[in-house]
Length: 419
Image (cartoon, rainbow, N blue to C red):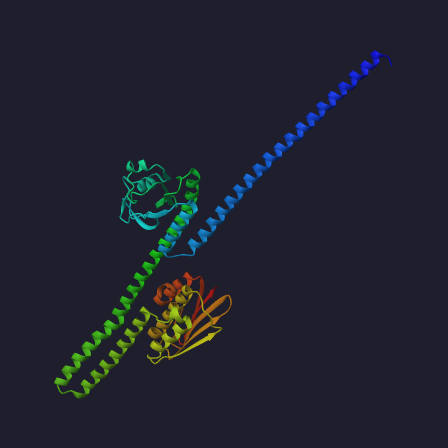
């Protein structure tokens, strides 16, 4: 190989070496790029995972709070949960719930933490809370100098940051949820988070308020019923006692001893009937053992205090006794009481049986008498006050009401509730 050929071969080797070096460099750059892309992807996956975990924790928190709220029916308990969870969710130090009392005023119904909101009424016009109500949108104030420009009636001077969100229910606003004094101020994410929470809280608050109103109406209805019973029974008995006493006095003055004795006998029987009616009304006002000892003990006390003293033979038969939620026991007690009242007033019975049968999934209540009975076809439930009340209470606890009766054959009232 001469010098020219050797030189050419060396040049070719250098070219191949250069090409190989370039390929190695390219592959190394590609590997580095892939490693960088993998690192970016790993970082993004980690961030996405963290975001998913945070959202999942928020969702679980919301579900937990919602379940807790819906289990409470007392308004003050619901409001306390709302304020507590709102502070913890956002990291605030104080909170308050304001509810509309009418179109012009808001009332601070609950407050928690520090600083404490004032308790006075807040006007809708001209106040920050009113602005939230009118617009139906959240308001954030992270600059204390802004507080002088907007009248923040319900908060003291140590306020440093405030987030107020509306409480929406059925397309309307029933009030405002405030959280205050978060370190570093409130963010857009805080606004979104608290707004979602407030929507759930508003449903629970409205549920508790409706429950409270229903209970107040039930109390009013019960008072009116007792007033009617008092007028129809005890008042009439007292009026009759007065008439018999006057008649006896006149007969005695006229020397009519037998007539006087007859009037006195009528007076005694009427007074005893009035005492029985009064005892029944007092027992209806307060069954003392229902909550402490349960349904069976309460029915035993009722039968002894009312039916027993009225000369009506009464038996209580119980199978597989156990305690039930107080709401169900209370309604079953009042159903049994209404059925027993019907027996005393209308059945002309000498014997009544109250039967309770408990299973793992149901409870059956039966009240059976041997009285004169009636024709269910001619006297519908709606036209018979006692049975109508029983039907309403049975429906309230999701039970099924049936009753059997016929003239001269007594009456059986049966209520079955699936637990």
